[in-house]
Figure 1 (cartoon, rainbow, N blue to C red):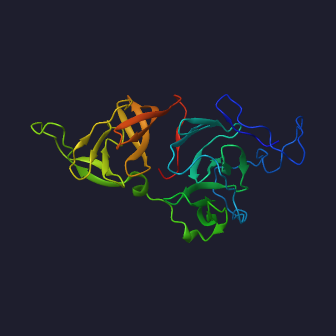
Figure 2 (figure 1 turned 180 degrees about the vertical axis):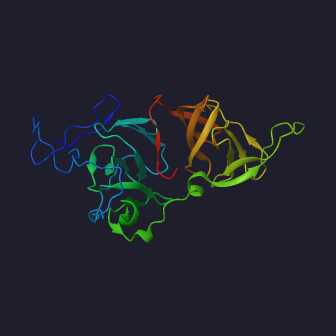
Figure 3 (figure 1 turned 60 degrees about the vertical axis):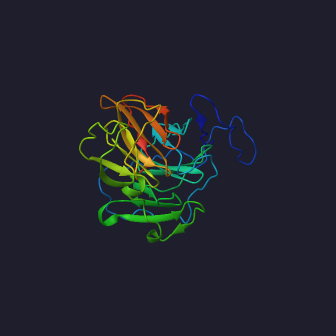
Length: 285
């Protein structure tokens, strides 16, 4: 039976129809079955199997500009939480209508209603282009390394050169050194600080564990934000000209995920972090 997703502790959908409805079926569809192959940590000496011509696509309520992150089997999409058990998320990327993720070298896809096996194994990294419309998968290592790509909207394979993975600047904005001006002109603003300039008219300093400070690019005037949690902030991604999200920290420990809107001058806590469990954001962020 296909594993179904449930919002945290709440069932989401009825069992999938496979020909006829069998409420007491005990077998698993081969496509959905938990992989039994052992993936070792040593470099492969043979080329991975040929990549499929297509990968799954979906129409789930998720887009590349959403706030998406995971801990263990729990996938967070904005304010919603989905349970992917028995799968666990080690890497993820967001595409229109779904999320690709890696567990023990195997690539899976979810449209937030069902988890599907892509058939790709020996996966070492995944990435998308800046818009999230193209998927790049790297498999194997060394001379056995293979790079394949797909159109994430149609699911069709494309030449890998057609999909350029998003850069650090695409995700975090252009680096700069700025002096942020406060409300009072008679107060020394201090020395220039490392900053990231967003794709719109704003930027932030303190995106690497320091306190979060936002500013207008043209005037370098500080933009005060309501709802900021913690004492530090680590920028994950700009999702628009005035929107970004990242990890709120306190005493060097992650405490939650902040989603901020500079036009509205506010941040909100999109989710709390479970202490002691790795937090996985989109690959390339």
